[in-house]
Image (cartoon, rainbow, N blue to C red; front, side, top):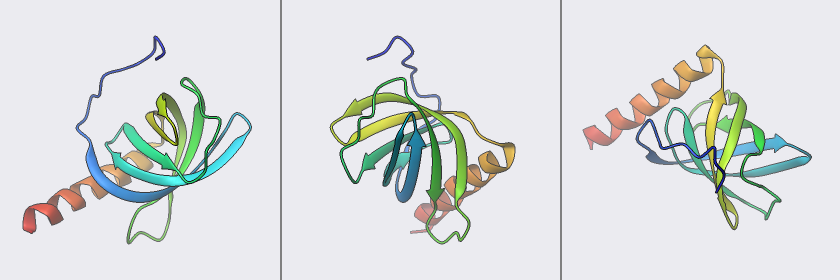
Length: 113
């Protein structure tokens, strides 16, 4: 682990969303397994040379949303085989609002069940 590891500031929510990521010479696709406003657990479809401390840009497709969101910078916090966790460090306020609205809609749906 890197000395920049941070404890979570928001609770994680299990959800499955497709994600494309790019950075430091790599391009990949995977699935978000759980996420919060500022931290996400990703499972890559293919093995990638992802390392702790790498900066990635993310494009996330939420279920039932036509326009994906763009995360400008997420830093890899941990790596285990094809899974890794990222801490979101840079996103626009509009994207943050969309993420919060999506989380709220999932929570409301789960509470209704």
